[in-house]
Structure formats: structure tokens, C-alpha cells
Length: 220
Length: 388
Image: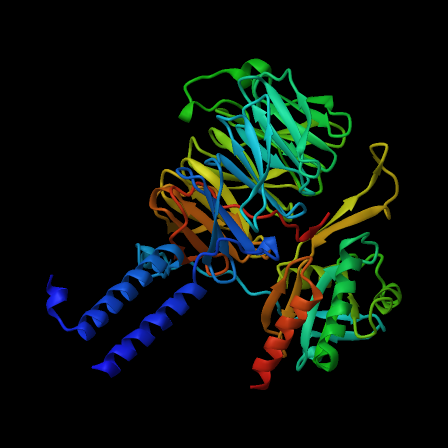
């Protein structure tokens, strides 16, 4: 009744305000994400955070040269752990890394893909050289002593385990094995800092998009 | 006054436009199904869809019936919803919410599991002792295998289905090609497995079998007891019995296969088993009534979700120690971790919300509301970031 007693302009303003408030209340009901300060979430314990992947390493590249993480400073790195006898995951990932470089076009010059073996026994620099060249000339194969490989995988929270293959329930030869391993691809920054992790199967377009995003940030 | 009127009208139109752009969509093409969390309601025929990039509800799928369980198949780009009372499984298009097919079964699908390739679904019925296997490609039942006493746990491998029968203490192997039982592994004596003694929650019998990602080893707990059986799945035999805590529920493994964890509900501990050494390497503080153990951040952390204690116990899997607890609102269900291992989503049934936990920060970073009535579960398409 009070609304009637007001002028037409005022009632329209009040009506508009009421509709707007009601509309946003409904929206909030459907799509709100209530942040930390609400619902007791702020009472969380101070739990130490997990470590970020990355750290110092000393390895041997596919030309036989000893390299450390410092040799790659100034470049963005795409780091992947695998082995040349891998039947599926490794060749697929390296093919996707190659496609990512292609998708990056000229920006690919800022990115150095590292393929670090988790099978140093069989993956010598020579073996790695012919393997990585089959995918893209920019990919650098890295190997090392078992201890060096253990150290770099630990720094990257990467998993690997040698699995003897059996024939008729018996281990046939000591060289007859596969290696279970992580299939993440890590994007590292020019200072060796962790930027992003790509799950197995991330499309080259998505990887290139993310790399372009960090390159843009770096330039700004 | 006219100016004021005009401004208020503009404001209203602007509010409407902003609102329209943020509306919960009725039909939304989910390009990459791996990016979405699906939250079924226990009290309404609906599944809420959350975009993991924004942690916002993007759509609510309206189903014909209230789902008892929902699975997500990336391969088929479909949801599978069970309805126990109607003895049916519905295949739902997540883009439209349309139920494409209702498969009527002869059994009550009390629990369902999805095959690793995402094309097969198995369901079991304890009362009839039957297991049904369905194809999402054909959208029909492939086979029904009867004759189990209590087919409690179902676990797919690449070419077979393991059925943990708590009535007999045996794990049976069903060949997916032949559609019949082709082998049995004795895990516990039948009498011990089936004995319903004075145990917490009345649990008894063998748990479901959890296998390592490479499919070589299986782990099966004796609920109500203090044992965990280790099974060589290649040669189909029990190879070891490990002593764990009291009343182990079931084993959960890390995605890389390095560790297996067993929640001992009786003494509120977690037994951590190194799958290489096949030894219990740590017994850590846990919680009661564990609904799941979720792992993330390069498998360096585990979150033990306790339904009755409304919290997640945080375990550092590198240091093998408890590092803290995250309080959660009422009735947290089993959680799901994003394919990159960065975020954990936990449905909080009692508060109609979903908690988002950053697995590196080990903190709740968001509470999502508008996730339906009594959200019972949070589920995603299965992913694999390890080569085995």
C-alpha cells in the first residue's frame, strides 16, 4: 500500500532494487563459493605445505657432456621422466612435447625439453641420442649414475621402480625388465622454479597455451 | 527524477545480464570431462557439476530418479547412475542431462565399479550373491554371474573382474571374455571370514581387493581382524599375511603404486605398507569411520577422511608421519582428487557443501555451496599419470 502512495519513479527504483537483490541472492545460492573466512574454515591448523618439484642436479646429456641444472638457467624447461624401452607412455609424451614446440612457433626457442631417463643401465648417451632425435631436435636426453637419477627423481617427487619381467613365472634375464614411472610433465621457469605440472594426456594446445601465458608474464 | 529512473533501469538490465552469464546452465557441453567433479544428491534426483578451474557449479543435471551411486566414464563421455530399488542402471549424457538408456537388471546394483578403460561397469547384489557386468558401448548387460555367497568387493583388472566373497573368504576371478569364474584365491578361512563377532560397526569378512596399478599384487583386509593378505595376482595365490591394526576396513593405494594404506577403524590407526618390500613401514594415527584415503601432490600426501569425526587427517607420505588435521563440516564422504593431483574435493552431506582442499598447501581453500540436497559423494573420470 505504501508503494502506491509513493510517486511512480520512486516505486520503480524500489522495485528495481528489490528485484536486483533477490536475483543476486538466488545466484549466490546456486553458484557461490564461500571463501575461507566462513563456516569455520579459518580455524585450520598450520600444516606445513608440500615441497615444490625441482632442485639441483648433475647429469650427462645425450652428447656425453656433463650438465647441471645451472646450465639451463634462463630457459623454460619441460621436464619428463621416462625410458627408451617404454612401450607407450614415453613415446606418446615425447610426441606431444614435439607438437607443443610446433604449436609454440617462434616462442619454442625459449623452451628446452628435458627427457630424463629412469633406466640409466640401458639408456646410455648414445641410446638416448638416437631416441630423442626421432622426436624433435630440441629435446635433450639426460642420463647419469643410478645415484644421480635417484637424486633428481627425488627432487622432482617423481616415482620409478624397476620391474623384472617373468616368463612362465620365472625371471628370464637380468636385462629383461620394465620400469614403472611417473608420467607428469613439469614446466620449470628460467630460475629453475616450478611453474606447472601437466598430467599425462594434456593436449599440446593446452601445454602451449600455458607456456605462452608464463612467457607473457615473464616479458611483463 | 527521470534521470534516476533511467539509471535504475540500466542497473536492473545490467544485473540481469551479469546474472544471465553466471546462470547454472541447463545444457552445457563438457569438452574435457576430466575437468569436472560430479556430485550426486542423496535426497534429490540430481547431479551437480563443478568446474575444477573455477570451483564453481556450472550445471545441475536432473535425473529421473535419485541416484544411489554415480560413476564417470571418460571413454564413453557418460555418467552411470545406479538405482537400487528399481534394479536399474541409467546411462546419462553429461552434456544434456538426458538419460539415454535405462538398463534393467535382475539384481539390485548395491555397488558399482568401472573398468580401467571406462567401458565396462560391474555391479553386485549381496542378497542374491550375483554380479552383473554391463557394456557402456552396447549399453546393455553382458553377463550375470551367480553363485557367490556374499560378493562384497568388486575390482577390475585389465581383462578380469575380481570378486571378494566375504561369505567364503575367497577372491574369485571372472574372465571378461568368457563371462564366468575362471579362478579362485583363498584369502581367509571361510569360518573366520564369515564370523560376525563383537566388532566395531559389525564389520566382518574380507574387504574388497585393491591391486597395485601394474596389476601384479593385490591386497585384501580381514575386516574385524588384524590381518592383511598380499596376493600374487599373476599366479593367483596368497603370498603373505601382514599384521595390521584392529578392524582394517580396506586398502587404498597411492596412484604410483609405491604404498598401500589400510584404515584400521578399531584402533584408529593407518598401516602403511611398502609394496616393494611388502612390509608395514609405519603405523600412523588415523581416525574412526574412515570413508576414504585420498592421495595427491605427486603422491606425497594422504588425506584420511573420517565420516564420524568430521575431519581429514593429513599424512606426509615422504616422512611417513601425521602432520595435522583439517576440520570438515558434517559427514564428509569419500573424496576425489583432480587428475593433476592438486586438489581434493570432499562432499559434505550434512551441510550441503563441497570442500576443496589444496593438496600442496594442505588446507581448505574453498567451500562450494549450491551442490544439491545431501551431496553424498564427489566423483571424477578416472585418470592415470603413471606408466606401468
